[in-house]
Length: 271
Image 1 (cartoon, rainbow, N blue to C red):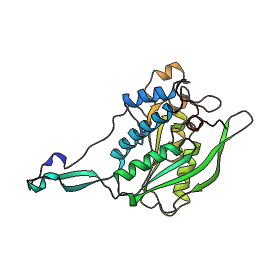
Image 2: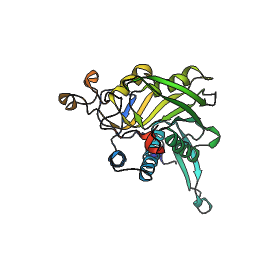
Image 3: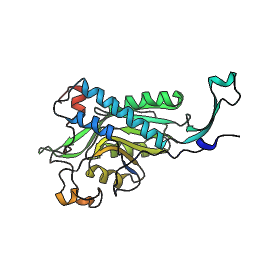
Image 4: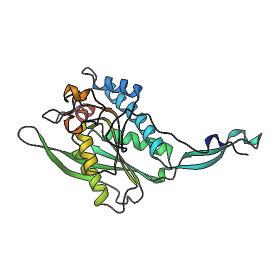
C-alpha cells in the first residue's frame, strides 16, 4: 500500500484580500514585509541592500515556483533502501522537466533574474532552464513624466513554445516596461509561452491596471501594494474596491511610499 498523504498537493502562498482578479497575487508574508521595509529605508545602502534583494527574490522565487510549476508523481528510493524495501518516497513534487525562462530587464531586473535563474537550475533539470536579457528604459518628457518605453538591445533565445516565462522586476510602477516585455514574448518569438509571470517586490494600482488591461492572461506576484497617494476613504477599503481612485505614483511616476530607484541603488549609478 502507498501512503496517500502526499498523493496530491494544494500548495498556494497566502494572500491579502483584494479585488483585482484571480491573476493578481498580493502575498501575505510578514517576513518579506520586514525585509522589504529595511530595503526601502533611507539609511539602507550597499552591501546590505544587495543582500536584502537576494533574500527577497530567493524567497519569492520559491513561492512562485511552488504555486505555478506543474506537479508530477515521483518515486525516489532513500538511503534506507538497502535495509528496508519500503524506503521509497512516493508522492508529488514539482515537475523537473518544465521549461522555464528567467528574463532580466536591465538595470533593476538584472540581479533578480540571476537569482531566479540560479534557483531554477537547482530545482529543475538545467537543460530546460534559460536566462534572457532585455535592455530598455523609460522615456520621459521635459516635465519628467514617463511617456513610454525605449528598447536598446536584447539577448533572447527565440524558442518560447510551452515555456513558463518569469520576469522579475523589483518595482512595478507604471507597467510600461513589463507590458512591453510581455508583448515581445507573445508576438516576436517562436511559439507561445505557457505562462507569463511578473515577479515584483512592490506594485502600484496603476501597474496592476496597466498589466491586467494589456495582458489579462498574465499573472502578477508581489509582496506589497503601495497606494499611499489614494484618498483616505479609499485607503480604508479593500484594495481594488475603487481601482480608478487608487494611486501610488507621484508626478514623476515614482512609487509612494516605494523604495526609490532600485536600479540606481543596486548599481550605485545615478544616470
